[in-house]
Length: 264
Image 1 (tube, rainbow, N blue to C red):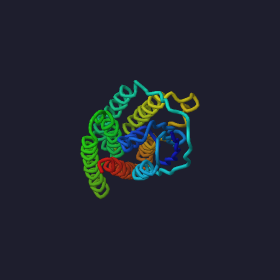
Image 2 (cartoon, rainbow, N blue to C red):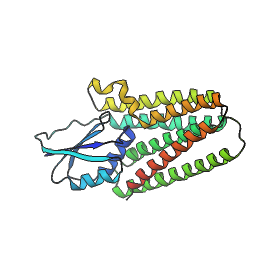
Image 3 (cartoon, rainbow, N blue to C red):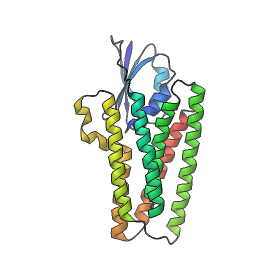
């Protein structure tokens, strides 16, 4: 048995972990995957050569780079029986906040909230593909990934068009208080998702420190919407909201292309 360690610089949250799991699913030489999100490390226990595994990791464009390969005597790995239940939990949280943020974003006229809702939906897609493809064929998994990826891109493009319309139009200011309050709740929800998934992997308590939560892109986006809400209020301009919306839509499209890579 060999043990290969990868550094994955863009592995910020559990949704990226699931992307990697799905990408490597079906490679028979892999015995176990051990993820360390706070330190952005992936340890692969495998037999034979690492070439196919390394190629698959690099194809996701998550900044994957092989650090080392060595032999190991470890042949038994503890499987987490609660993983599927926990995936359902984070899927429910993300999808619920997709609905909440989309609804409040439309009502408050905030593109930042609308964009963040799509980011929540993107994470829901990743968790959903992980769940619904379990036990299914590789072809089934690829079809689901392709549909999810294209749907995500279409929604993000519609968002871009709306941002342009509002930028050149004469729109009312978004409700800054709604932006801030809803984003604070979304921030808490993302922290909870990251916590329960990390806890499920039986990591040491040191890995559960609060600082790791703020490595997540999702949490950074929430903070961005909060800051945009504050700037909307003090500058009496909708531009900060449109700027954060544009950034998040771009991240959503980037995530969609990663999902599409699973369908190839």
